Length: 577
View (tube, rainbow, N blue to C red):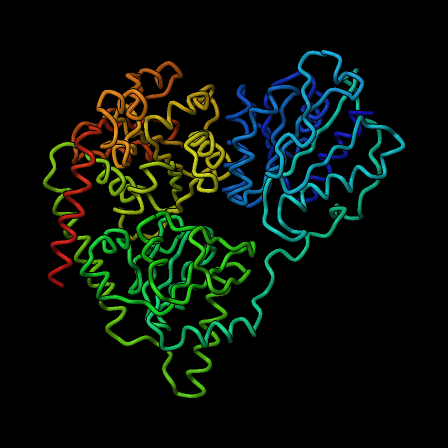
């Protein structure tokens, strides 16, 4: 009966758009593991480590917008999926989490690999489904169960996409042949209709937002999760506003409204004093820059938040109005409304002409100052690594960037460009599972993927390297190796505790030969010690294909000084504008 139940789940998942499963080996999960392989329509990937498997499946969902299945056996194996579940929950990434379980009679009696898996992930799932040991009399509910799991994970039933847990109890025998499946909808349709997905933009909301923005001095803060960046820049051009573009937004492209170095500019008091916005529109997920967020909150501007899931992202408690909708769709509707109104009335809606010009001019000056400082350095620096990696990627590549310093350096120092999508696990902002996430993205995209990570993040996910070469993906891993936790050198702890204590608790030197670790897994590694060759090394690695590691050694103590020199150079240059 379990075999028929599992075959039904898989068939209904496929009908609902699921096309990939990631399996962590185990015994109790055998019925579903056999079913995903036997069906033949799913791409099936196996990983020995449950935590890596969870992040692989998350990476697939991040890249495609469709839930992947991740399957594990019972016991502590299920707990290993928790970090990926938390990230999927916070980031709104669809994920079908299938935890195999023992039947109820084996709970509470000391049976091996048996823990309480009911609501194991708490409130971090969109829904929890526990159908019990499969029985013939329940067969009429199986397709509904599978369809509901896909619908809930995909956010089609209302709310944001995210993880769904199916806790599936299987009794022995675990190996059997599936019988006839309960009938599905005709023509291969899913049991439940897909739902509306993103709701259309309300014309009244567009009109209200038009009243707030017309003629005002404003800025668009573009975070992650924007489907059509060109529509954001279209609205910015109509309003005469800058787009303060996080690389993950897709909006950091060469455009007359793009501002790439907002974080650096907003550290300059003279510049901050000269620009006082009346409206701030926050699009999508939170921008990576803490400085930008604090500046926006410190203004008296009217604050508008637009998010696809309708949830209010407001960690500083300043949002005055919130709109639910895909951000670029809202921008398109508002731009069209303003264009039509201008054509009908002849009344301009743009901010004063010098408003946008001041932002763009200062951004260009800041970029030149950074280039001058970085060009004078003989050794590799972490800001230059971020800038050079982004510049070196071919069109069509995907960059998966780690939290901690890499995502910040990318946001602070990378230049506008077309053709590269930037992804990151910025839901919970953890550094775990980054390489596995990048692997999932590479499996889903089948195009070049580059992971940009720190050494601690790389070591934290070293199990991702197991069997990596054999997966036949194009994945280059660029690791900044400063022998420890570089971000802590920027935090108050660096000055508040004795140096030896700081090194023990925060600097945490690891002393691991990262190239040697990669070699143990059959991965070719290149060490970069010359500041001028990193871009070429990354480009060559991507062009060669396969799995490769590029290690860039930097000095933690020197890194803080390089960042400060960049801030000082920008401040001096912008003060003269």
